[in-house]
Image (cartoon, rainbow, N blue to C red; front, side, top):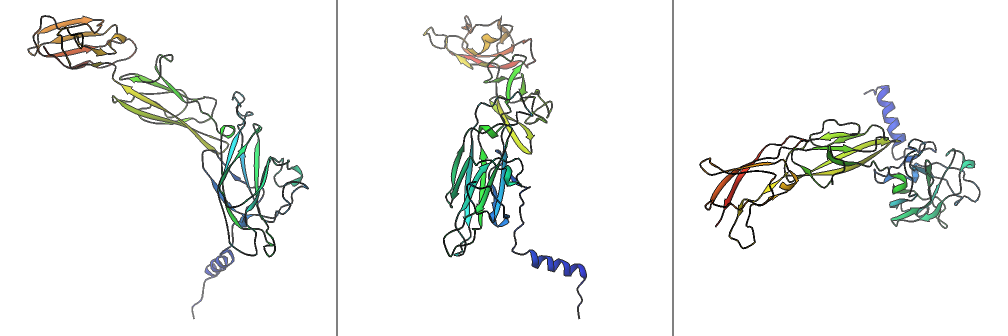
Length: 352
């Protein structure tokens, strides 16, 4: 005869007792919602029977589960602007167990409370309604800052013989300006914060900033000098490429992110040919953005290495006078005072 060990017997008994039963949620452990995390799901089968104040919005609360979300915390961040007090609750789904003895749908209330386990501290709900399986978005207006809001979801009781509250999966998410921190990520080319931020010229350094009042800022992206704090700098390489930088922080248990895109362009783009035939079109050698570099020095050589043209502070006006149609080779030194760049070299053809 095989004897089972006491530990194995305990495991088997535990499995039998727990199989099919839901893990209970108590009033002091509401499911926290973050505007950046999507919908969270609870089942009213996990809920507990609670007492609600008279005239609350529903009387039957035999299997109630709780969610919670927080508006922008001006106590922690007093310099934040709280200009939009709206948010949105997304009811992603309500799936109820089909049973003729249970109701269909849930009772739903949004409110505040000093103590979520003490019904005498519940405020009058700002939203109260019975909901079925239809997904929807609920507008929340005039939310107070620095406030925890609770969502009570209780199984609804139907008409006889559906005398028992429903058992439903309920997926809820929250979003909107009142619950989302703007990290205010931005960038500018060093050392000129006033220059337009559309592009970073090849060889320049990008300065990345976010609101330094937020704790634990971390950055991800290419060629960063640091992954934490604000500001940080980046020196990505690669012309005509986009680089995305993401900043992240955790506030009251929720992760918030923001991102910026840095576009790198060549500092100059020389044309590879021109046709000095006097027709008013393409008569001189054009170098895009060269006029932004007054210290640029340009030297052009023939195929045998003879210098045929040299200029500083070029104005896109060289027409190759006196030179035959041929391919020539240039070296362009931008000579910037703010950062280092390699010389631009290449070929330009005079077509006659």
